[in-house]
Image (cartoon, rainbow over all chains, first blue to last red; front, side, top):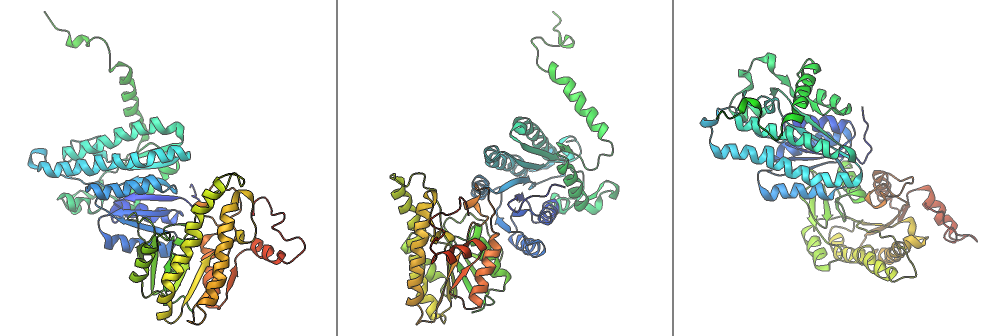
Length: 267
Length: 237
């Protein structure tokens, strides 16, 4: 387990409940100071007071709705100016379970704004500082629907596919600068997510639902090993490796001068 | 006085030693903790009330004192440091002016604005965060050391000026503390919480001065000797 110095600080979005709150607890106990970001001040207060008592760490809160530009800008500013932050956890996310055409487009845009735009802006806010300071870590909470958008609402899945793609690119571009990027792909996790998305978790088959504690603990084991893509539920890493190998095999052939023979135009 | 049930106002409380003062006050049962911050950025700690204040601006300081009229313990902590690369160059003047605005004049503004507040609340106390650099200087720390010597001198005058209103004044001298200010220095540093605890213990025991660490003690003891440490201060202390 990496043991951070007293000057390690993690900023966690969506930290007032679910996966974000568990990350907050685990990291405070690992010795991190925390900046917790969420909309619900009461819950933030409660978590911050409890964790400060338990761990003696400095637990700061920022009440912010990352779908509001001024709030997002405030958090960006903190990431740009606080040199003690060496871990960003982009956890705040919005989901949906309904089919595309049954979903209101405004609600879909909200999902994109939070899962894609806010995550992008926060990553941009911290990355230059990480490079300048010689390192840092970003944990992006994606989802298995980023690989399988057929499962739930398609905009939600697409937003998480974006998170995976951006993480992959960031990882490659920043690896030499000692910036570590992890994309975590939870499956169904027992959190408020389901209730807020319109499908109570109790309606799911319990065999596919992981507790938020187990999810985060597994993801932190992977974090310590500096794994890039972490799918806590996937039993066999070989299955992922095969998927990744197939993707790699495509890469050299995705862009060529001539169309493939199967598309040859018959005169 | 006791920290328990005190109403504490700390300047420069967004990070470093100021933050440690605010948190320690909360932990020791202060009734209220005001964190004076130059540029509030939305970050808060539950239980700590953020107050926007620029200690170099008299109007801003007065407004803060009006807002925090129940204060019983003032911690003049806000301070800046700049290294002086050339004591013989113009930067010595420029750097000194900049540092003095916060470390010296700022301490005066805040003390002047809060002294009547403390008087109305029964006297209370003031902690002035000084430094071991009060009593020695090296060229790179020339402007900073001068500002702390000046603030020390003001502290001694302030102690007498508010004695009749029953306000205690404690000068806190300490070597390098582990904060952003000293981040670039690869030396042994003191935990800011230990410093805040030592200062509060000094307040509770009615002391006028607290020397936190061994070096600062040694330094002060040497002042009246034939070879005071400021003749040949160690490279980093």
